[in-house]
Every structure is written in structure tokens, then in C-alpha cells.
Length: 280
Image (cartoon, rainbow, N blue to C red; front, side, top):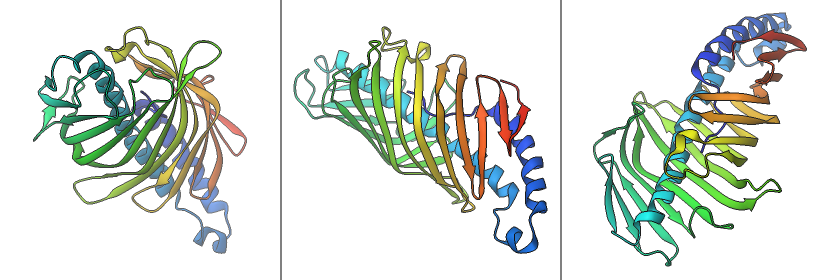
């Protein structure tokens, strides 16, 4: 399950471009306007923080879906299993009773193959199995950490059934999303997107060959109080291995700076009608 992710290498390139251009815009304002304008550096930091919180919730979505799919094969065998040193408990542990609660307990910390240390508890309540149309899967957190970030909020994925091409679609919503670092700085996040599973659905227990199309809106507030909103003009095409955005267009608003477009198909970023290339 992937969401809007602007990967690190691309973000660094775009950050340099944005800083230069937004600073120019900022200082072209008159004094009164500038005093009420979002600081360009803070605006760019908001984009960087968006990348961070988005990656955290992408990971949450990936692991939640993985555990629900795994539960379907193990529910009739045992109520508790160990997956990569995390304890996974399924209640009730049969194939027919719902809602079903899946609890993943990472204890004091489990280092995953992706280099991320997770600790604490993730709880998923599923109304049916993952592939069943109409099923919902609600994920919440109890003192859960993704590396040094404490994660809070509610993640819900609802199976909308297949589209006219036979691809499963999910409506994904995140409410009250929040991550807090060890300096007690918090980033806030909400999401309402449609995710279309276009590849990898025939290997449900192996997420790394998955590909998705995503469209919708994400928004939040940075640690410095800058509002940000990202909207898809064209659906984003995600691959997980290697992690990449193959195509799609995002419309970005950072504080008072709007009309920023990131085009992954053409590897360009457009600001005030001027097009700049970036490495894709």
C-alpha cells in the first residue's frame, strides 16, 4: 500500500529549486504583503516534513495490508504467531468470524529488513478479508514508534471492489495523523485517496512487486505551523521495488505559495508558469 511519496533524492533536487524561486517571490512582495507571507524556507521545510510523514504512513499501510493478508492463511491454524520477531495475535482465530482484531506487538523494538526499527503496538480491526468488496480495515496505534517518530492517528482502507479493468480499488482515509520526534516536534497529516492495485495482486504475501495508481488529496500542518495540501491532477503510478513514482502530476500548495506542479511523467516542476527539470 503506497501513498503520495516524493522520494528523498527527488526531494533534495526540488527543495533547492523551491528555495531559490520562493525566496525570489518572497522578496518581490511589498513590505506589507511580505510580512503576512509564509517564509519560503518554512514552506520548503513543510514539503520535506510531508515527505517524512507520508513515508511513515505508507509503511503503516503496507504492513497493515500485509498482516491482514497473512492472517487469512494463518487464522485457522493458530491465534498467535511470530513474524520477524513481532508477535501477531488474531482474535477470533477462525476463517469466518468478523470483525476480527489483528494485533502486531513489536515490543521494545524490532529491526525490519528495510532498516526501520518499529516498537509498540499496531491494532487492525477488519470487517472481512482484505479482498472482499466492502470490507474495511481500521488501523490504530498504541505507543507505536517508527524509528524515532511516535505515530498517532487512524488509518482506514475500504475495499471498493474491482474497476472496469478488473483491478481492486481501495478508499484510504487517514484522520488525526501525527508523528512526533524525540524533540517533541509534531507534523500533522490527513488523507483521502483512492488506491488502485494494478500489479502484484497475485502474490499477496509479497508486497515488493506491487504497483498502484493513486489519486486524491493529502494535507496537514508542518512543525512550524505551515499548512500544506497536495492534490493529484493526474493519478500517480507507484512501484515499490525499486521505490519510484513512474508518472502522474501533483498540484502543491505550501502556505500562501500555490500553483506549484510536480510532473513525474515529464520530470518537471512548474512554479509561476516557469518549468524546471528535476531528476526522476
